[in-house]
Image (cartoon, rainbow, N blue to C red):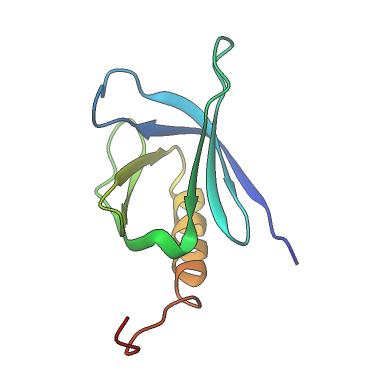
Length: 109
């Protein structure tokens, strides 16, 4: 079953140019986290494979929203600012569940 959940007005913070934080729609599928930028001039998508996620961390809520820090195994770091705590919690739980099943620990790979 392909479960897709979407959350509007998620800010994907770009470490390179933090001022240009796009308001994206966040889509959670069975295999990926997808951010789709909603600006009229660009149609940019950022895909993160669940199996690439190493840690997910809830950060202190600020005036701008509820941050979620995703660290990937390829050393990319993505910070999401989600407007509502309830949505952040849902995303957090979904990602933790999704990131677990594909683990191949103890295989010496």
